Image (tube, rainbow, N blue to C red; front, top):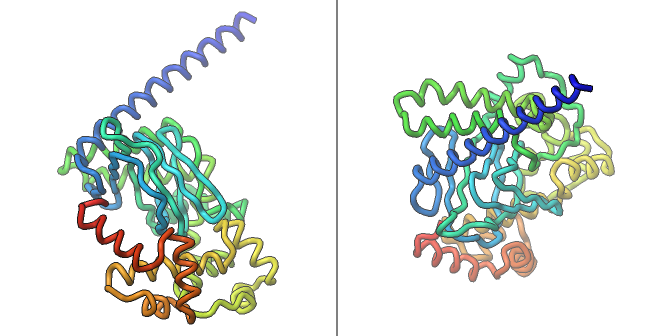
Length: 320
């Protein structure tokens, strides 16, 4: 009994030391991001690394989630993927493995304690290389693993993120050490509980399974009529099986996926290329402008041109 008590005491002391180290890393991450980005918006101080800062909560807005690791240093954020809802903070990281349409907002931020976030783009080729080096080239054990997840960040992953952010202050060392630490971060993710999800990234760039091929097809041909039978046949699945597996990965039906891609592209065309709503609607595959207007308002909260005016006004005031 004495040995068991001593072992429990040792484990407790180790856990306390680990938590102290993790808290020190969280504090350092806040300090370094705060110093690297002084005003609201985003910067890319190192290749593949983006830092974000917001001094107040943001409105819910749509966007595309790229394959990336996101770690919040301060504040919190929530996002929706189809019907799935996620919320994360300094104790959790977000991992996205496939380009997917999402809606999100910063929920906790103030001038005194701004929202600060680190984002690392995950290159499929590099992920595949690390997988090969570690011998983790087998297919995922769960082929239907969702392509986006929020989970608890462990001390070793957080430590690697902090060391990567430190390189912002040593530009002479960054070109040598940044690729090494990035590989370590990928390794930590691969060895962690979300390793199967990380494999999605490499799979998308190589021998793609049916759902990965379907996602890529829908993204490239979003402006074409969607015939589920044709897509299912193309990827070698039954229609019912295709629907089930597609939603298991993306949290959306194929039609919902296409709709969000279309509407986000229409918004980009109206803001960036000054297209009117009708022209944008036809450009992304809508044949009925009234139908487009209804679906646009449902996603963005305003009719097309009013939404575009609001975005331009916000941009004119320097809002990121």
